[in-house]
Length: 201
Image 1 (cartoon, rainbow, N blue to C red):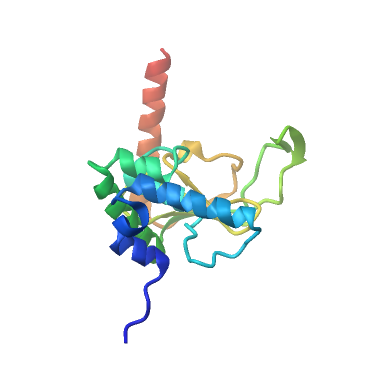
Image 2: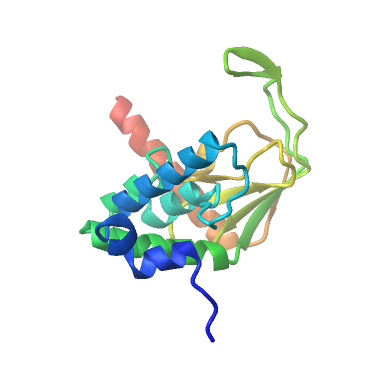
């Protein structure tokens, strides 16, 4: 006897039954409804296995070649697909990729520094949290951009399209592990800066 399907697998294989149609936008609204129900009933545990990884927005931005993830995974996938049906399938492909991805270490920043003393959060003046001792610069595919992975929870891991977009940290000792990949990152960052300067002239 085969094991029962998880709910997310059931939705993937039978979208019409749960969503009415094979639509990523419908699935997104289904997930939001589930979250609202859990919040209303103070259910913290994801009992049905529908939790999307917190960094999935960044992963989708990376794979769909968006420069930032603010529009959200659903909008980015729909914008780069020819239909809602294609976007639905692409979501599950990207989710599987995310769960099996293997990082390629391009560089490390050892003992980074920061010039900031305080930051503002929610209109309050807050001290900068303790700095990470190491930041790993990694890629997963040949898509442009990279992920900065910090060795402390106070500094969340983030996707960046260009080296110059890294915020909050500077200095430190750079150790380059993949010269070619790092050179490509530098070139992409310089090209973006040139484009920006031309637009401002």
